[in-house]
Each structure stands twice: as structure tokens, then as C-alpha cells.
Length: 237
Ligand code: VGL
Ligand code: ZN
Image (cartoon, protein in one colour):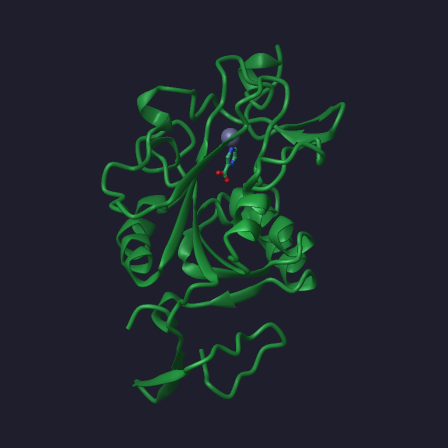
């Protein structure tokens, strides 16, 4: 990230520090009292050996742990589905994972069974070490409705309560890391913006699924919505 490459969504933090790194000047920012790290779905099923493994998903874990130590406030999310959940291909006879169907609330990508409540696959990744996390938001826990977003279920009406929590605590800037960039991270970032929060994706602390062009589409939608992008190096010195 070049210091002179002032992207439209670049962050102008108070107390900017700088680090010189291989010819680049990296603007460092120290997360403060109004900033929160939202760690999205770093769960066993989304990592190697899991039911819906995100390519190289495990790689984010050490970086997410380091990021979390740099933040005053950290919130985690957990994808948390019932058995027989509507987002599972196995719930729709004749359908296969990664196909899309139309449900009452709109298009739904079908997935392998994953993150079933209380199963080992739904647990946070065993190497995730964030003892200070203040809140864990579980989402997608109703059989008939999915929820990629940490803020709002796929019916686009039912709130998870996260926006209220952040507002009541004076947390205005949301930094996102975790899995998957093109689904739960992107939907959460977009919903954060729609609810009046600043949102910035820590790009190298996320990994995508990328099915049917979903990754490029997610980045385009996030850019259009004013979601910022930052490298972890700007936050962890
Ligand atoms: C996710 C697909 C299905 C995610 C959750 O965490 O991005 N993706 N459920
Ligand atoms: Zn899910």
C-alpha cells in the first residue's frame, strides 16, 4: 500500500505512524476506542479438512490472532446452522452444492452441510486465540433462513442485533477479517455501510470461496458501497 496512493476509501486515522518497508511507506494506524475488529466465521468447517473448506482458509488464523491483539474491541461471528438447513444442498432433493435456487427471500447458493450447531465443524478454529473477544454473534440459526451477514439475515429484514450493540457501545469503524471474503465478509461489510458504519476489509486476513465469479463481484460491490481495503501490515506493526 503506497502512502501516496490515496484511494477514495482510504482511512485518515488520528495519530498516523509510518513505517518504511522495501521502498514503500506504509501508513500505520493504531486501532482505538471507536474501532472494532469483526472476525468472521473462522470455523473448522471453513478450514482445511472441513465440510466447506475455503482455499487456504487456515492461513488467516495467525494473522487474525495478531490483528486481534492490536484492537481494543473484537467481535467474532459463527455460522450456526440447524440440521437440514435451507442453505444445504442435501435439503433439496436433486440439487448439488454450489447450485443456486430461488427461495421466498431471493437467490440462495446451496452448500455442503456445514457449521451445524454444536458439531466440531461449527467450532471456532482450534488455533484461533482471541480471549478478549467481547461478543460472539451466531447467525443462520433458523432452519428456513440463511445469514451470510453478521448484521441481517437473508430475508433482509431480521436483524442480528450487531448494529445495536456497536451503536450502543460507540463503535463506529468496523474492520473485517476472516472467511469467506466473497460471502460472509462481503455481506457483513456491505451491511455495515448500509447501517452507517465505516467498513474496511483487512484484505490479507481474508480468503474467498470464489464460485461463479463471486470474488470479483464482491470486491466490485464493496468498492461501490465505500468499503475500504487495508493490509494487515498497516494495523500490526
Ligand atoms: C459462508 C457459505 C455458507 C461464509 C457461510 O462464512 O462465508 N459461506 N455459509
Ligand atoms: Zn453457512
